[in-house]
Image (cartoon, rainbow, N blue to C red):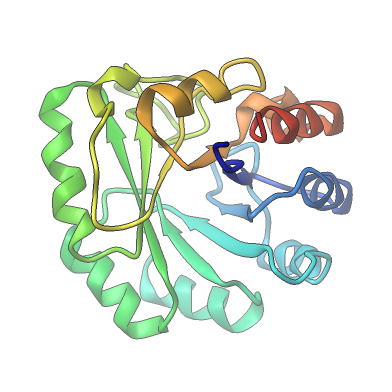
Length: 214
């Protein structure tokens, strides 16, 4: 029997979101620190929400090309367990962040076609985990959370040396198939469990958590 997927519910913005994610057996919860995103939270909001996360669930802070000044403030004021770099951070920058803060670092890598795959190997050398996401369309305001999937066949059967997580366009209806096609054991969802952009739906969160166990 295949073990259930480890799920990261990203872009949580309320205590109700956190509770719904915990009830859906979340392994990770994500807080977004990116002003252009409808899921953006302040450091104060995130600090309060982090206190509501049950023990055993990894608290992830998603940032986009953040400088040290912001990351200093973030790590001092919010009790997080992992940093997620979702911008254009180079492998060198990933290594710098990991060394400076002593926290596990997850690097998001956008995939549109086979030419993007070598990047995954480059970041595997420096990051603790990789988030394999759909590359945003040209001109998009958001680096992720666009509800887009990529061709999962591109990574079917691939094996990497570090843990990785599948993201991009996942929903309660397609997550099991996505995992089957790619071999993913970890999945990330944000827009796929929302009623409107930035507003999570507890029923969709529950449905996603249930689908991830099948």
